[in-house]
Picture 1: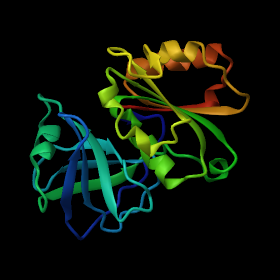
Picture 2: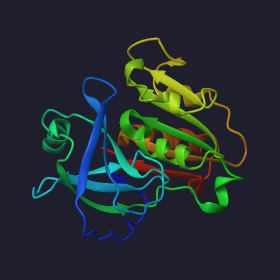
Picture 3: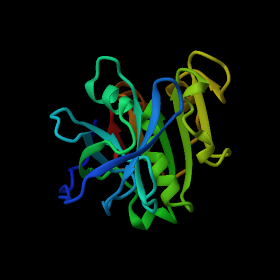
Length: 227
């Protein structure tokens, strides 16, 4: 995962991070909950997670709210990926190594109450937006989420149903059958709207150019690339 912003300094912790629980959203996607240990972060930032004592680590956007007493990340198992497989097999009490937070894929304090946002995500790229919306209930947003099937609408009931648009490519149990890019080509943009994009690099590239063609200025588009 890469960001269009500079990373902040990571924090050093004297306590172990301990797995609390997992909840599965699909057969291969789950939310991992673990102790927070007073880690301070801004909604939208990410952390680096791995099993304690092992070299393999990976970046994950924080899924939980700034106000929660625990930390959560949204993990999709990748069969050839060491970290996701090991996290899937972890059990309550297992110890994690956590570094961060990093990144500035966040709302500016001055925009939380007055800004108008469109969040565009594919797959688990919904994770930072889940943290943002759960942290700042007053945010004026619309979330456009692109996945293959409606099964991958990860905990969409966390969002206002009138502010969440599901785009699916492999079934029609959604608001739009097709990719987020085809939806955005017909989407009317209100003046002053700011866009936050999170997901695969191909989507970000295409959405950026669609938005520029619609007159959105570069400073009103920020992105976080997962792969």
